[in-house]
Image (tube, rainbow, N blue to C red; front, side, top):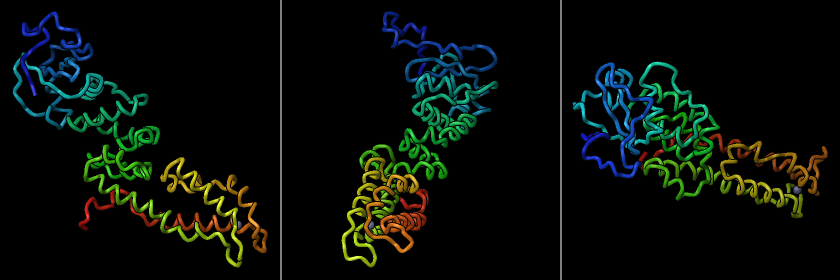
Amino acid sequence: MSDSRRSDSPLTDPSDDTPERDRQCERFCSLDGGEIIILRSSDRVLFNIHRINLQITTDGPLAEDFPSAPEEIVQLTESADTLELLFQYVYRGRHPILDEISVTKLLDLAEAAEKYGVSAARSLCYVRLCRPSAHQLQPLQVMAYAHRHGYPHLLDLVAPLTIGMPISKVQDACSISLFFQWLRYNDAWVQLNARDCHEVRARDKHEGSTRHCFAWRALVYSVDITLSGHGLSMLTNLDGLFAMDALAKTADRCGDVEFLGARKCMLQMLEWKKLLEEKSALIPPLSQFQATATT
Ligand SMILES: [Zn+2]
């Protein structure tokens, strides 16, 4: 975790390329005010941090009373960008509010905050990742983060966005445990439309009619096009999936009319939507699915 080579060490070749040499973070360069721990980022930036701050504001490995010689450097795996944000939360003053940070950087900071137990950063990252504008951009990565660190609310918030995603993509982003849990959750939604709604989808002769309704086939095709274009996660947004204004024009081509003048295609579409609402309400959130076959 640490070494004793400083940026000004004779072991460091002055002719080295600049990127290979340590450089000091200007924000964290203090040598006063108590015992200083020197930490190096993965891209070789040094951070001088007061040990007392680490002990008071964090509850991870940096809070431990590990021995540190004056010349010793603690090597960390995070980038300088991440650490410069993170260490601001171990000091008093205004902390970064993270309102314009990219989701990738927010996730990096969130992971570092969890790893080193920086409570203030950990809480704010969680709140930021709960915002749709953040987790909608990288739902799989946020889902994996939520599972890894035990945030079931966020896990269930973001899981609907992953329904119908390519299996290999989900597998790459998730732990084995979460992946198997997600497979069961995803399958419940896939079966919802394919199995539970099969009858109403395939019913192209309206009740009481002997002729095939081609308008109904066109309606089913339109809904399927929306699902294939936007993904099966649209099953969690039924008002968007069954955008009535758009589908009503197709339904108007239906030749079967109820006695009150309603096209049977429109009534059957409402039946399909209601069935989806009822069946989808029975699907538990991701956090309640078992990861293995054992129950
Ligand atoms: Zn019809």
